[in-house]
Image (cartoon, rainbow, N blue to C red; front, side, top):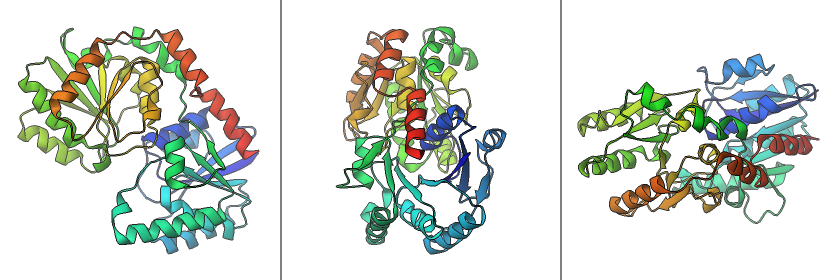
Length: 365
């Protein structure tokens, strides 16, 4: 059996982490096993499942890149043998593949999950990125990205990038809308005519939840009968709750926290909103389209996320709320593609998890 060490920082319910778990569940455990390195001490959402699947979790608690590199190298050397070290932490990947090189790991994978970085505007950030890109270029043996835009961002001018799409268990989502269409209305005790919106993701600056709340305030003044379910947790959660309270929107905004029943939540959703400042290739946008849920998202997100199912509409963060309103109303009226057709289209585009597992196993060899 070949053990693969994934450098992730932590395995909470977020895009890249969910993608990894989708692959891990389907992987042939007689041939491959995943282990994980965290850079945090606290327990993560997927810990129990990882351990139940036979994985190990190692923790290195330091933020200094040099110290991390040394400690990671020592850990890899001590816990050998690893067939590969697979890194998922954007520019930190450079230092992690360097540690794997020092530990004589022959397969060192840098994986890009994003199309931008908040540190790009600072002098230190640019310096760090330049060093990291050079380290990745020199010490990575494989380059993987969740999409074309993510690959071009982290590995510019590299023509040897494997695209491992953020695939999902499509069947799990495609028929669920028929079964659980009233799921959120029943949970939140809503009228049948109430429009249910959602925003799903970590409550952090990049997800731009404050934009959503301001947009919700605008919609209330227009007289719509709706609620929005905020699914997720994060460093800005308390601040966001205070903003909702300050604007007196508690009847319209419901905080659901971290959930494991995302298929059911999406089944009960009329439309999803994603006004992010930047994204890689969000897993949740694959899940919404598999479910048949329309999504209104910012133009900062790569257009490659649109599968051609008439379920994704883009609006600019500088656009008036009236533009977002118009696009949202149009999405809610849009004729939906049936589940069999969605399954066929997403599979043909490579978003079936069974295809991705085969591709990943081919990469690992």
